[in-house]
Image (cartoon, rainbow over all chains, first blue to last red; front, side, top):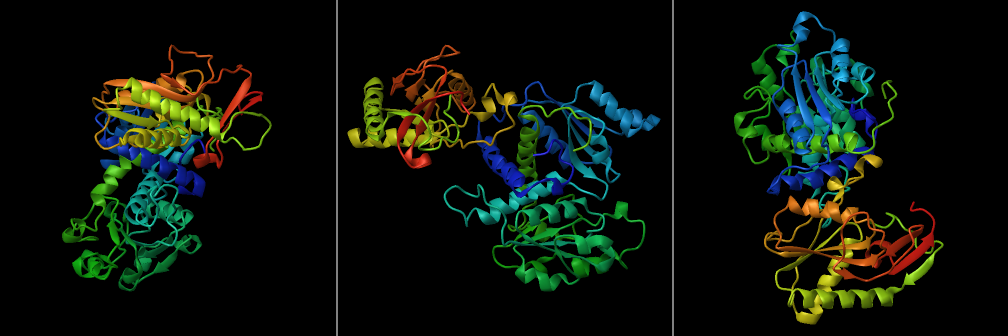
Length: 324
Length: 189
């Protein structure tokens, strides 16, 4: 594995399977009386959050603490960022404090990549602008594998299995979604066939070069999908009118009970959260047995533990000071 | 300490225990466990991956044959508790698989293939500590190399003293396709 986790494209199939298999073992920790391992004792993980986040920050914090690392939380609100401190100066401050890993969430695409050039520790991208969110893709892959591949595999559970042959449909605001990009890259690495279903205005220009198919018609994709992943309509990033009205978007691309009924019997419904109930997903769908939304949160902690362990648990990487 | 992770059958080295001798050693250890624990009541066998796990299963089967007793058997991965994690790149985790009922109040017999520095067993004791509170913990190994770096000893031993310059490979049918213990010169790979 590389020293940083900036993009899902950095992961080979072997890397991704190692992370998922490690997470599979760590998942048992939740059933134990002592939900803590001593592995990262004495290591410091900094959560550097320039954008609001509930689950990702808490998830990374829980993951680091369960591995006994020291956690420093930094959020842009109430810090010197308000006084105009640059990302680089903040990074150098963290460096001076001896951070072994920096988990960064930033509104600018590429922030994690820049940061990786400035600090000695590992950089974990927890979402940069509309670029990538690789740990979300890993936890989604882990959730899909647990739900859909475990029954196919032998007694060893889903260990070692990819997502070969599974059809995943990612629906909605792909243009603004770092989750979609990371998922397309990771899921296709793991052998899944990914289709994006979205209005043409919410697809990035370069989507033709992504390893996936594209459709404008959600209803025709549903009957052949094993997984439907709904994306949040990111109104806070929308600077123009991408569809006539929320109601019209919801009519054509929202997942309601009638649409869910068109899915095959085993299919699951995912959402990275936070949800706009009634816009991209109906409340009855979000709360149905097919929905993995709560499971995804629990799996997030496990998957991030696996990533932190694999990046920080072994020998320190030689300090190069250069990204990747 | 575990033997090399991937020993190759037929490499240079001297076979010091063949399949028959391994079978006899395990039979003796199974009898000793029954004797020491007064009939194997409340005993569970936990193998340390990789090769401790099939050894634990074989011991459980042996005990079943002798006494008609169904001894619970599982595995205990110690990777996250090792003291040498930072000397190597992060390694893949083995499987921890406890029998239903857990370890509380049981006599846990840890099973591994080779006992050398004692560091793996120390990690195993720490890992066990997080899983519950056994009544007693004992240790069974197929090969005791000596050269301990910690105050740890085995309760049941197949036996074999070696020099520190030698490498010991335990090969088991379940993992390596044959049963034998090989010894060779040189550093561990």
